[in-house]
Image (cartoon, rainbow, N blue to C red; front, side):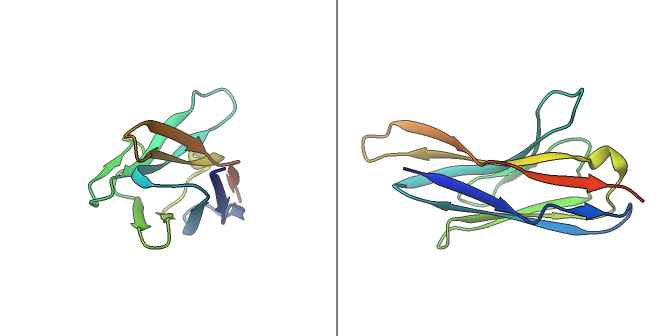
Length: 120
């Protein structure tokens, strides 16, 4: 089975930086897109950032210029560097990957989430 494990979430003060990481393991053949989503109470789950295997990135409007996503294909890991955090960034952050098996069948997987709380 494929497993995604996020780490790095914690309580952080406004303005501070924070880095998240996600490690994928299991029966993976080809990982295409890896990304981060977040879900805060009262809000819909939304895209934070995603990155293709080739390195093309996409960011949500609210984080553009502050967050940076990166990945290590050899280690099956994806990272999220967050800067200038505000209370509005408080949410559970989830790692997601899109993979294909040897038959070119697509599978999507999600991590368990890691909580980021931005507060004084």
